[in-house]
Amino acid sequence: MDSYALALAAITLLAATVNGALGYGFSSITVPIALLFLSNRVLNPALVLIEVVLNAYVLWVNRAAVPNVWRRTGPMIVGLMPGIALGTAIVAQVNPAWLRFGTFVVLLPLILVQAAGYRRPIKSERAAGLVFGGGLGVLYSVTTISGPPLAIALNNQGFAKEDFRAALGLIRLAESSMTAVAYFYAGLFTVTSIALIPWIVPSILIGVPIGAFLIRRIDHETFRRICMSFDAWVVAFGLSRLLNELGIVQSSASYLVLVGVAILDSWLLYRFFSVHSFTPTAESSSLPRVESTPVQRQVR
Image (cartoon, rainbow, N blue to C red; front, side):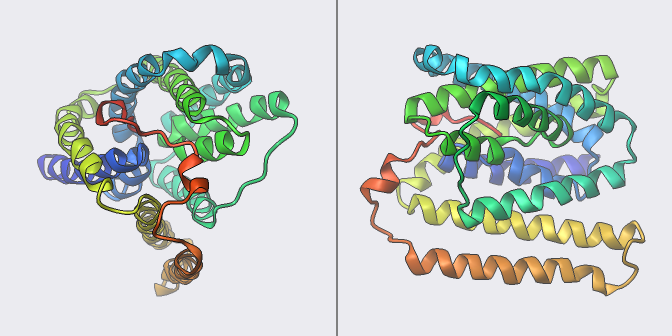
């Protein structure tokens, strides 16, 4: 367990640095790598407890914009409840190896969609929010990751910069709090899970300021895009390994998933760098961004 804890400390330091730079990415970096040696049942409870505190602080910092967003985010929050109940039951009952496999299968397309920059605003926001909230609740309670789809949804619906932060904090505090309660009643908080927290917190305290320092010297969009590529390759590697371990593909052919993702992501990277300007534009600077100061960074 000590070697796993040391590895987790190193992974969360990297993830916290990414989060400090971009304002998001902690769970989406931590979970795919940590699941290579930890199960969801051990990892998730530790991350959820940390996120309850951090999301509460983020919401407090951005509380002035809450009156602008609570009506629009209400359907998503209502939808979270049945989704989290279902997701918690999945974590408690499904075989850990198959749960990791399902996690990777869900995460990979989300990462690639984000990398491709896909957006499509939805007109029926309240009805779509209820359905989206249910799916988000399942995803978060199973993986502790909700940042990528949530950021895409809020950006699609045209949330202004301050409203974006407040909506993100409100929804993520609701989902992390509900998940913590559901985990408690499901008996998922164990000594092993709680023992991981002291290894994670110092990484956050160190990594977030480092990320905030680095992003002032590195192009924001370039850094974000490289982090997504890293994430995609890690998830593809984990998925390839599990295909072999679970006997779904009992040969080196399982690594064709990794090869396929590498080819697709390389093309997306080429497309990104061929059109991306390294000089910030008015359009890029107007997009909602979660980060503002190191203290306001939140972990996802």
